[in-house]
Length: 223
Ligand code: B12
Image 1 (cartoon, rainbow, N blue to C red):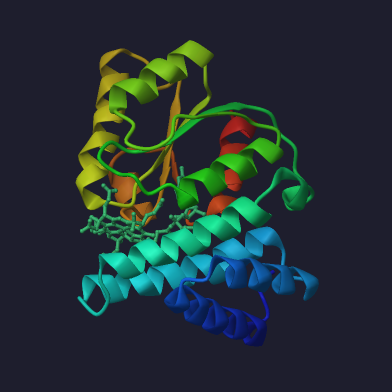
Image 2: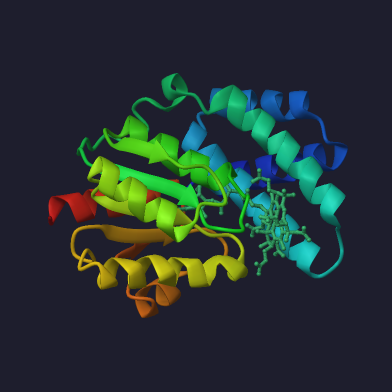
């Protein structure tokens, strides 16, 4: 169920102000208040942090804010992530338990890791064995690791449009090795959307970490 609109507006407004001040402590305090008002950790990330950072990114592309502001924002959000995005806080957020193996990473040339790490953790607490390769992961690294751990799914996070060719490269290499059916490939992040994913011949796109778990469940259930 989507978050109550008034609550969402209140917290997005407050988070935007805290991000401008650059106060990690105030960010953590805000997340705790949200939790005491019944907002789950996942909701705080997908319905408050994600839209605030998306707006900030849009302002950045209109040249209304600059790199130092983005860096300040990511410092606050990473502080919140380290403090509240723990396995304990997340237990019970999504109940369906299905097991599978996932290799995840942020694509080559891209160092954005906030969303990717969130997806990795949510998959983990939902019963998946997750190998997080970190950021700036080459197509070869994705494939080698998937083969090594006999993964079901390769999950690629892409926030920069310059990383799109690397996603296609993974698909092309898998096809060349006759392994396209063996590994399902899914994507998410600001550089991709469902129609791009479909046109690139991928097996799924997820708008947020909850959808990432849903897609993986669907893939595993139909395997
Ligand atoms: C914070 C941020 C940064 C931080 C990153 C800090 C970090 N450690 O991650 C810093 C300041 C370092 C940064 C740097 C840059 N950034 Co930046 N950044 C952002 C910003 C504002 C927010 C990203 C974020 O963390 N969102 C919050 C998380 C929770 O959401 P998320 O990442 O979308 O993840 C969720 C979903 O997408 C999904 N998901 C994510 N991955 C996956 C994977 C799978 C498989 C699935 C199913 C789902 C899924 O689930 C996640 C959780 O719900 C975005 C704006 C945006 N629209 O995304 C720009 C943005 C991505 N950056 C941008 C740019 C241009 C840059 C720089 C090139 C700037 C520069 N001139 O140096 C550099 C690039 C550095 C590099 N080589 O990667 C552009 C990219 C534009 C483009 N067309 O490519 C954006 C879109 C801003 C904009 N609108 O212009 N950035």
